Image: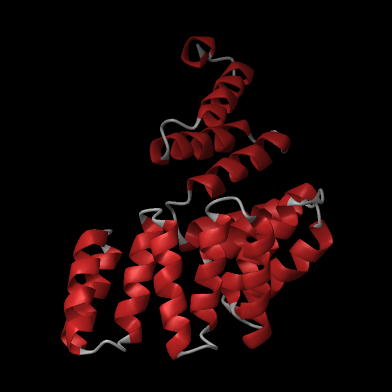
Length: 225
């Protein structure tokens, strides 16, 4: 049984979501209360945006373990995925009420507060997230965004670079760093960040636009066109 869970976890890391569901359903035929299998099915449905199915299985997990703050946070994610910010916020707050240092919920709630204009509240949540889990790259990326919105560009750059150090594939962090560097007139460094953004997300229009502006400012007009 344990090996099957490990197989399903590996498949999930490989984004093979249907195989995860199939493997976990086999586990559930032998142990209908395998909370790990139920959670992996729910996460796979969420990853494939089958929101109703995801909620069904997350709620099944909560019947087995009502205080599972990870599942409560993931339920919040199902609401955030469809733009229901009020319900998302409610679940993130509930997860934090159970575990006040749970960094993913702090990060997600901080992001909501940032996007709805509650910048100081957002910053407090995001700082706490980075303190609770210094290895959580999205927390640093969101914190960098918060600092930018408050005009604290030096702090923003430090947080942004930390985010990239932890996860070099976060295109938003590369883009934000490029934006910060443009503001600092560090155009050659900004060019590198924007090119990395485009490498990771080729259809990111704003990154192309900003890169063109940087190249023009560097006098490389042919490349900018």
